[in-house]
Image 1 (cartoon, rainbow, N blue to C red):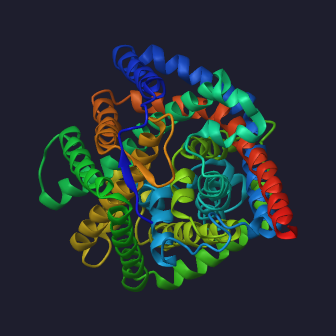
Image 2: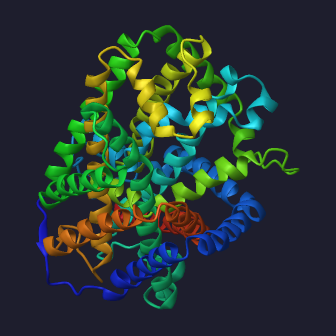
Length: 513
């Protein structure tokens, strides 16, 4: 399907500028008054996470179970497009774009290090040994429920775009079957403002998570002593150039970059698995962790620690579910856009295969490699982290234990840039669509608008580098933003079911005629 760029549709300046202005204001506030703003946001975050934490857990588990129901029900047969339409992309390219848009470079950062953070948590000691549980929670926090958010909404957005041929590519439009005429009023405007605000807040913080690791790798490779801030800015600018170039070349450019990212990613996994020296440990611990996660899935999904003995779910699970909710503004739209011609069932189950499968592979291989060295007393990464709190330096030390460490560092660096580029070109595309009142299915936003969003998305992380404390602050803003977004996600799910039922009735009526 050919697409065309448009400058004819009116730009929605309110939706474009208001959230951006709020984010910039907050960044300035965090920079000028970091301590005060951190204190206030910390209290707000504590209220949402501690007092209302069950809200996030219920939505997370509910959406995942609903996605399985939809995939297995009659709704799963609905083709995202015309009933006889064929898929727009091959299975491999489709899956590659889906996986790379859903996760940024922080997957590599967390794959290496997250088990260390859990290993020292009192909840792990309460449950048993590090060997038994430290590898379970990364799999749990990054797999089925996170991708459940993405895939159910992707099916809803794909239905909205390709079946109903909706010209408004916005969160509010997905709620129209429930909101009706109110979609065009204040209710719809509030939903869209919340969505763009969450998108900007989530994007800015995601860049800040893994970029310092890239800086640490460059410093190690080049043996230079330059400010991490300067290196981070250079990395962000290079990444911006790559994803901007990819985006401006349309879905073809995004597809090529995503495919290259997949080859790099799985090449890295294969190398660490086969040549890292911990193959047996990686496979056996990975299988054990998968088994424990599956066996205890419902318990892990509903654990609230009522007596707050460790506050583990408040610190980790609730935080993650909130963060995935924020990210649901961009990724599902993109997945829905590229799923034309596929059924709802294919979109959901295929997403679980590509998205969850690739995510689990990353955590099992990279996480268990370093944990294997720790548990067999070949290295002590936990002690190093406790000594100086430098997670990035610890990951560099992990990679240095691998054969051909400099080559691995280069591979990790290039893969991270590719991940950032493929995830953020999809985000920039989604943000660009929000800048228009209407946009037909075969139209793409004007290249000037796309370029503007590419630049804006990178400026905020650069600004935040000069106010280190504000990164946590903005992350808190993202978590707070997830509270209303969670309610919107539920509305979108209900709207999809209502409209899909109506559509199938229409098809049945047409067949009878």
